[in-house]
Image (cartoon, rainbow, N blue to C red):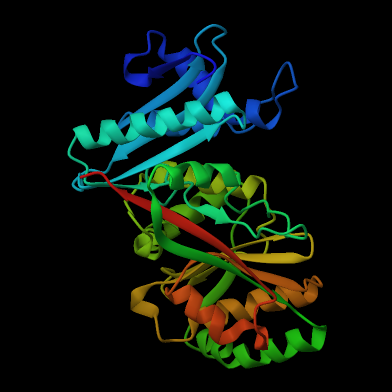
Length: 360
């Protein structure tokens, strides 16, 4: 390295709060390097995860210039409870400079050594603890006319992926987002007609589909769907259960910055949650984030019923683009997307990858 680098671990930092501030503010300083005072919009999110890490078998590091103290890079390593053989490396960020990249490489080595010393046999990356939080790299097209990243996609720059590949990490699990262009209102009407019988059957059997409540009622709705959300996300890689308070904080934060008017809860006649759909709109696009049906209520057309209502929302609001977001290749959501697809092949497919490296 052309600049001497000092690595500090959170567990041994003399001033824990100072470490946490530097760790949490680094992404915003990288995003706005020329601003003297950075408004750290995401710092509270990172602070929350640092606090959650105190319950876990994990470590956090920052790498700084020895002379100036300027933070160049950060990283974390985590070993899930009961699965010491499979670990994760996440929270990675570094400046896109010679010094920043060198610091990033050194932190990747530091994280791998820490994991190997504790018996981890392999590490996946990037993953912030587990799949409830940030994970996956976007695999961007190498062309001048490549589509810009969407606000909800993994945002790590391409050189992050290259750094991990250079350290021996290999492709592990593939994901994709499927985007469809809706040609006309008539196209929507035909699609709704296809789903309408399942919606009518659901209503006839006592199911109700309604938007999430606003205000304090939103927290109540989240508590009602929490158990089903845990079931729905269990097929994600390295899944773990998290406390409701953390789930609520994540979802509420997402709802504050997104238009989730198209999201729905499906309840059975006894009031219990049978399914839900998390959707949000950005401009003329609707993004399907999660569509889940409780195992006790599957094979009753409820996913189609939810889709019917969401499609009606799109028709009323002149939404012409839909995207199934961050779908794992081969899972149920991908099969539904290919089966329905608004009677068309995807107009765009965006690809992502989770990496893995053996440590033994």
